[in-house]
Image (cartoon, rainbow, N blue to C red; front, side, top):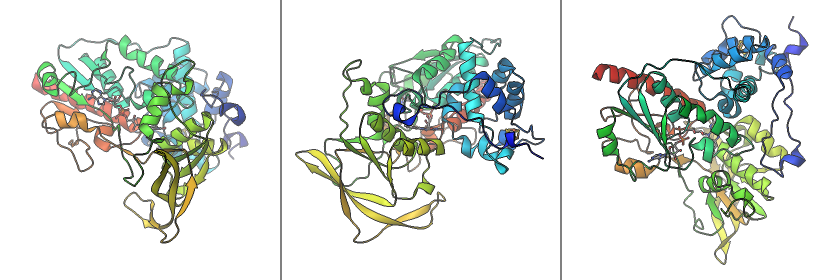
Length: 462
Ligand code: FAD
Ligand code: SF4
C-alpha cells in the first residue's frame, strides 16, 4: 500500500499575499535542502517512467530525483544539465502540469512529484556552489551565427559550442535572454537567475553581441557571407491587436510594450531608481487570459491598480499555467469570463472604459477549446483608465522582410523542414519564429534539434 507521505507534496513556502502584492520579489521562496530531499523521496522510481517521455528535452527525471533523494545534489544537477542548459529558469517557468508532472504516476493517487520546483532548487544550488558541467571542447574552424538570445538561441549556441563550433549570438536588445529577460516578470523569474544562468554561455566561449539588430546593424546577406551556417530564432515579439474602435487612445498598451517597460526597463521603480515612466491607472483591464495576460495583470496589481481580466472563454479554457492563474486570483484579480471587448471608450484622448459583449461557448475549435460566440444585444460598459491587450503575438516582420529567401506561412512563421532547415541553404530556424508562440521548453528543444541538424549539415559540407 502506498504510504500517505506519497500523496501530498512538501508544501512550497511562499510570500504571503498581502506582502507580495506590494513588491516584485519572487513569490515561491524555494525548498530547503531537507525539504527538497523529502519531496524527491516521494518519487516511485517507476519501471517505465512516463515523466521522461513527456518532457520536450527528455530530462532523465527519474535519475535526477533518485540522486537528489540521496542528497547527491551535484550528480542530480549534472543529470539535468545533460539535456537542459537552464534548469533554474525552466524549473520556474515550464508548464510542468502539461509535461513531466502531468504524466507523473503519483498524480493518480495524489499530487505529482513537484519536479519543476526540484529542478529550480538544483539550478539555484549549483549557482550558489559554483558547480558547472566539465567537458572538453575540440575546436572546429566553422563559424555559426545565431540570431536571437531567447531559449532556442541559448540551447542551440550551447550545443554547437560544446561541439567545437565558433558561435556568435546576436541580440537586438541590450540584455540577453529574450522573453526570459524582457517578458516574464521578476516575481516569477528573478533576472539575477537569468543573468547567472546565461553567464555560462560566456564561460564556454559563445561570443554574444548585444545591441545588434540583424537586418539593420548587420544585413542577413553579410551574415551569410561570413558564417558557415545560421540559426534564426528571433521569436514572436510583434503584438497583435483586436482592431476595434478606440485602440488609438492614450492609456492603451500592448502587453509587450507594457511588460518591456516594466521588466526590462524597470518602470516599476520609476522615478526613484529608473527613468522609464509608465502610466497605470486605478482600474486596469487586461484583455486575454494566457501567461502574458497573467503577467501583465500581476504587474499592474503590484503597481497598486485594481485589475479585471477580460476573457471571451471561461477559466477552464485559459492557456495560462495553473500556478499563475491561482496566484493571480489570490492577489485579487477579477477574472471576467465569457465577455469580449467591442470598443474602447475615451475622454480627452485617454481611455475611459470598455464596451463589452457577453459570449457563449459552442463546440470545440481546431485548438480543442470551445469556440466563443457573441450573445446579441448583451453589450454593457465598464469604466477603466488603462487597457492592456494580451491577445497573442506574431513573428517580427522587420527581420523577415529583409532576410531574402526565407519563406513564411500565413501567420509569418518561418517555414522549415523536419530538420528545421529553411528553404535557404545553410539557414535553420526554430522557437517562436516558426511556431508563432509556444513555450520555453519547446523553444529549448528546437534549439537543440537545430544544433544537431547544423552539425550534420556542416559535416556534409566539409
Ligand atoms: P524569444 O524568447 O522571443 O527570443 C527571441 C530574441 O530574438 C529576442 O531577445 C529578440 O530581441 C531577438 N531578436 C529578434 N529579432 C532580432 C534581430 N533581427 N536581430 C537580433 N536579435 C533579434 N513560456 C513558458 O513555457 N512558460 C511561461 O511561463 C511563459 N510565460 C511567458 C510570458 C510572457 C510575457 C511571454 C511573452 C511569453 C511567455 N512564454 C512562456 C512563452 C516563451 O517565453 C516563449 O515561447 C519563448 O521565450 C520563445 O523562445 P525563442 O527563443 O523562440 O524567442
Ligand atoms: Fe517518479 Fe513520477 Fe517519474 Fe514515476 S512518473 S519516475 S513517480 S517522477
